[in-house]
Amino acid sequence: MNMTKKKVVTHHGTFHADEVVAIAVLEEMFGEVDIVRTRDEKLFEGADFVVDVGGGKFDHHTNDKEYRDNKIPYASAGLIWREFGRDLIRMHGVEEEKEIDNIYGAIDSSFMQGLDAIDNGVRFHQEIPIPDLSMIIKSFNPNWNSEDNEEECFREALKLAKTVFRNVFQGQLSVYDAKKFIKDAYQNRKQKKLLILEQSSPWQQALMEIDKKEEVLFVIFPDNRNGYRIQAVRKQPHSFEARKDLPESWAGLDGAELNAVIDIDDAIFCHPARFIAGAESFESIMKMANIAINE
Image 1 (spheres, rainbow, N blue to C red):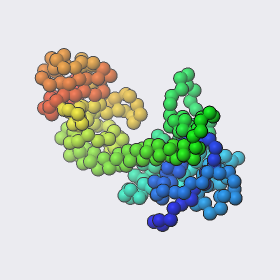
Image 2 (image 1 turned 45 degrees about the horizontal axis):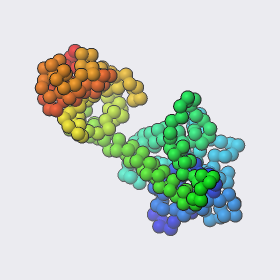
Image 3 (image 1 turned 135 degrees about the vertical axis):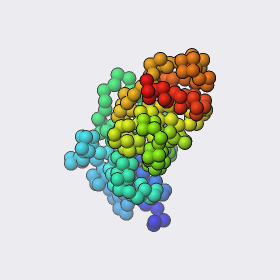
Image 4 (image 1 turned 30 degrees about the vertical axis):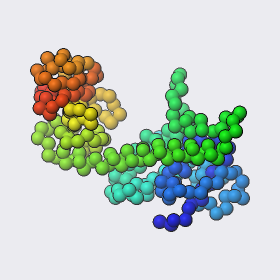
């Protein structure tokens, strides 16, 4: 990769999440960049990227605004992600085009689209404002009565945006990394309706893709704090409805009460919504699984 710093131009004045995140993505792709904040087109000369200003490829303030298939318009964050997202994913060792598309789409739908929508004035109606990244980045702008330097404030906001984007990006890569682990456990499982994992991992998305016949009802995995957990598999990725709930008689119980119902001595809890429960030993969590499956 060319080690010469890329030159990125964006507008000066009040900054917003879309251009800050766009530059964060560029720095993930190309390393640290030189940033020029201006609206003077004479200073655009020699820029590698002009973002959120100037009416070019990465500016959405034009009459021919671009929209996704779901009608969410693009802003500069989404435009940069559309251009470089797949290449950035490839840089992290992902080779299969289907998986690249999956990771790209997951980050676009869960992160970029919200930023783009807000910058374009598309919001869901809410009685109570919910803090989001757009609001938080906007708060870095100097107040009217402060003497803070705008350039320094912008760079502080960029640090935050890079951290948040990196977390989102690495999170999706970890889902990809978990797929082989989940697939191996799925193919070697001893009970059709139960998946047992040797370590905790982001299994939900991978299992949805692998378990086309929706055979698995519950997943067992070790908890990072103590013991084991049994969790119900959702019917859909973003649904709270499970393929099968844990027994109604367990709902909201913990400790001695749950022990008495199940006839074990190390139960930890069962969530009132009956989607997850825990026990200290593998033997006990297996007993809970067999009861839940057969009830």
